[in-house]
Amino acid sequence: MAAKDQGRPDVVQDARKAGKEAREAFEFDLKRRLGDQAKILSADDMGGLYEPKRGLFTSIDGKPRMLTFDDILAFKAAVKDIQRMHGQHSKQASGGILVKKVIDLSTPQDRERANKQIHFAVPMSNRAGVVQFQTNSGPNSDVSRHTVMVQFLSYDAALSSGQPAPEAAKSLARGKIKYDCSCNRHTFWFRYIASIGNFNYGRAEDGFPRIRNPKLYGVACKHVIRVMATLGHSGTFNNYARKMIEHGRKTLSGKQQIMTVKEQQAFIDNATNARRRARTVKTSEEKRLERAAQPAQQRKAVEAARVKAANDELRRTHATKVNKPVPLDKKIKAMMKLGYSEQAARIAITAADNAQG
Image (cartoon, rainbow, N blue to C red):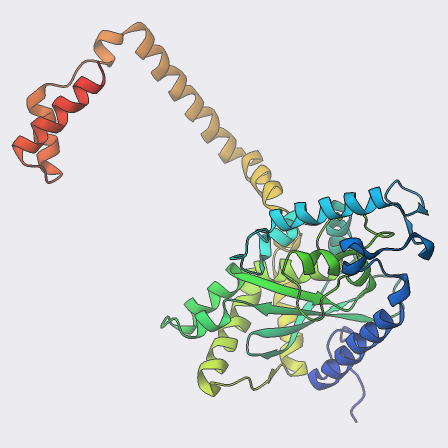
């Protein structure tokens, strides 16, 4: 076996090996979860079967204390709030979440960690619109990388759209997705939220995060956020999405499409060469404020405000000239240009004048 290139990031590796590591990580998580069943505040417990003698704790007040039935009522209200937020309160609700919404609903702390600690998000493989991404881990992690699975819910529609592959590819990141991550923060803080919001990919979680996230803040860990930011950078992701569409149209099956080590490195190089500002994770509101703060935008806003103020002043001081009535014949001619007959135009104008008093 060839030695690893010392200049290569840890996230770059054989895609098949990465897939094996991901399966092992998710299998470990499932076994651990099943082994912890007695410690979990499950959906059945939330439904009224909880027994106080189990002595479960919560940190909803900021520090651990014994769980009460009032806490369970508060948890259930929080669940309903999350479901309403993601449109899951009706039987006709569809699943998934928009990429930009993942970033918008994430916590400032997780976005900061994504910006400072998670530098790479690389697609390793695709199978029928489910892409395995790999990211580097944070500085205090006991592993060197994490797996983020993303299911593109608009994949089938894009595949069959009749659009050229580059155009169809653009719709993937604009559509809704579901996701999962192998890290502990997603497992213990956010998988439950993703499950009740119906944007979870992989195993569902019915255990309420009564200790780590009892108020259900946020939706995504730093690894997922970095992946979402990568999806939002059209220059970085669109080329890969185009290959997904081309592969799907060629094979018409769920055959796996893998990225070679060389292709992974090229993906990282393209992302690294992007402007630093473009790689920084920002919410929609932060982007709006940034645009508004730009000098050109400021000048336009000031000019628009001045024009509006001048027009308002003219309407107030020269009402008879500025608001001068339009002659009937000109109104009729204008409406006839829009397709009205002369008679229909007269009737419409008369009705409008009568309605105005």
